[in-house]
Image (tube, rainbow, N blue to C red):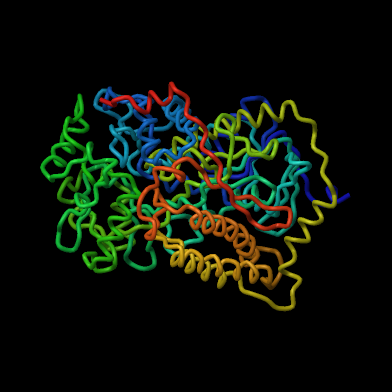
Length: 607
């Protein structure tokens, strides 16, 4: 039997991915008294979540008592241009405060108000100060807390393991197949339920803020197993990544810099965002420096500010396109960005205390002292709003027993994510995915593994070693990043998108001819060949969906269709699936109808 031939582990629930969503799912499934296995591509504690800096969004009302879940829900829907799955946005806004309190109970050390409550800061697109934070290292503290809490629950952790295929039977999950990155030996995981929590896809862009793990693994695994991808056209380009020196271009600069008073300026010293306030946010955004400064001075005081918000904290898609426009018009900084100035707003002591990671990042990587000099910043591929299509309440995909949570799942953020909503997304939907995976597993029969499926997965994984000659996966990755940056970047047009799609199809054929040398031990070329398969699936889905959506909305900006459609495209999500012949097809799926009571919440005056 093939299953006896390879190392095999059996659990009720397998979680693939050990970031915030994966750890929270594992904790919840373990709380249901089931056997849980946690599989991670890297080492435990090294997940991309640790790179989240600014804070976790939750309407706790600690700084502004007027804040509540309804205001947070409205902000999230508005930020996503109302293409969100309304039920996911509602659950997120309602449950986020409890998830933050839970983290505090488990030992998270948040910054505090003068009277000892969890401190909250301003962030783009949020009406009130809403982000609970630990300086600018919030993701790191969250992972530390979840990891420390989880290891005491008996969760079995499998580190440095790559999953290459999900195992299914009649649209029902039964496990996963992969290999140990250290020695290349294959491993089989038998499981009644699987939760995918593998994160994003940013490594397919040349300029990105993502760590090496973010290669669309969960999205591709789900797609190949028969699940659907949704909203893949929506890629968030964070407005503030480092632009100099070239070796660190794209490295993230937290939105917390602007939350603490940082302003964006062009080469002439002019504050740029006053020229880019969209109609959707005009009534709540300051159009003069005096009013913006008044809001900043008063926003964290008791009772808040009656002034309009600074335009530097508009949603990320708006700010990123504003910076792009300034650079294109010749008003950019020397290295192709704009300037972000915090030094004139905060004392050196404040900056080092509230933004310690940013201070050290610029000092060590760019030889810039942000307590005295401005930062050079520009857009960087950061986050995908698209991913695996899941049920809003359970996080289950169309494959029975296969769940997804976090960045690899779609629906929560619509066409654009608000800063800070990512970390609360992880713990809210990680918990729900773990809970419902456990419920499903409790009632499911023990899976029966098909030997033929395992042998097919092994043969597929080893194919790159069995060719006499072929392509270099690292060079192909460079070509993919160049193509996506050029054709499917921050501003898109149909001609370029179609050219990009042709390049992706050509790359796909070449990836099928990759040749890997040497043996399976520590073979990074082998790892890269599988990453290329996954990234190409995500890239093709993004490119096809971007061609189909003939409007500009959130993270999808079309120069040939610059306006946001108020008709057809405001009512549909674009879904990608694999046909029986192995081709990718896309379709339009109507947005779920918003019930009357939720419509009333969206229409309420948020005073």
